[in-house]
Image (cartoon, rainbow, N blue to C red; front, side, top):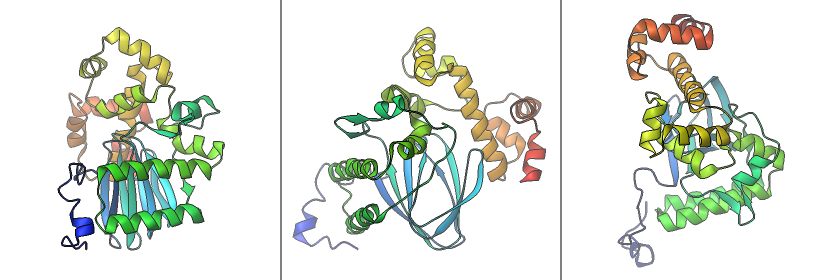
Amino acid sequence: MINKSDAKIGSHFGCFNYGKNKETPLIELRHYEKKERCQIVTKSNEIVIVLTGVLNFSFGHILNKQITEGAIVIFPAKHNCRMEMIEDTTLIIFRLDIDLSFCDHFSLETLYREKRGKRNEVHILNANTIIKAYLEYLTMLLNDGFYCDYLLKIKLREFLYILRFYSSMQELNAFFAPILSDDFKFSALIRKNYDPTLTVSDLAKKIHYSISGLEKRFKKVFGVSPFQWMQSQRSQAIYHEINCSTKTFAELGYEFGFSSPSHFNNFCKKMFNETPGNIRRKQ
């Protein structure tokens, strides 16, 4: 624990930037015990790294995928991820809330224009010796209480630069595929404001667009209509909840905005060719 009486560090506690985003800092350490379970609901695009330990995670259509020390995974905003710890585990989470770029000459839009990976798949990177050394130093800072927003922004940009330097274009493309677009600010705005219960009209109003303006820009950036994209996101979230939660189907139907259990049942048969009961029994 940090000694607040230490003048070298203690003088920073009154600073505007210190603990600015206390609930969801840009970079966060999390410790879990063996057999502990947790559910992460991402408010922003998040990179999760396993510093120590082993865990299984379920995300979208991925069920009980095991990852170990050094694994690096990215989860898009507004998604649920369930984790079960096989051993005592420590994670470090990077929240990509700032304007993303790897350097002044290489942005996510640049990466998008290269050959793209499959957007709905999770590609796992593995930390090399340099990245592990960087994470060890960063962990020491966080354990000492360095939760200064100004510093965390610098360390996040530094991590992205290191990741780019030690990864091939193909690896970066596959890893960032779930959040790539040729207009990252717009796609980030959509992901941040999306909710499974919204209609296209609701989303347009929420981000101050006309419906026609939203549909035009959306199709250009995402390659599909807002309705198609929202249906896909909704179906992924529903599939995850059916497999990974103990909620009743009536509860899930209400949570995702269906007017009746039969409407929810029909949606599942249309999207998954299975009733929710069959999906859960198989799991």
